[in-house]
Image (cartoon, rainbow, N blue to C red; front, side, top):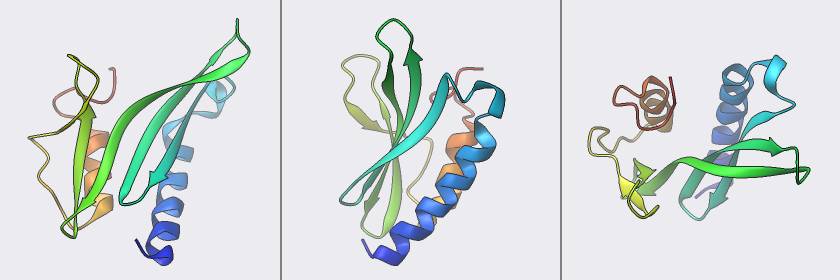
Length: 111
């Protein structure tokens, strides 16, 4: 993936995270992301007070496949990544992030 595209998506995600996580909880909960070639994983991190370190839990994975962004979630059965059938691949990453944020099926966020 082009460096320009990576930087653009990082700016978008940094802004999203700034809005998503209220300042009052940032000392105990945060969102981060990790890049792999053609994959971006959004993670929730919670502070483990007993071990004094952050524990990460992946929320969603975006994969750039055939010039489109596909959305994957962790399977509750075995923890493997599985394509989310109700979010069709799309050329616009921001569109996919909006679909995850709306989470109409309750796959990504706990209400």
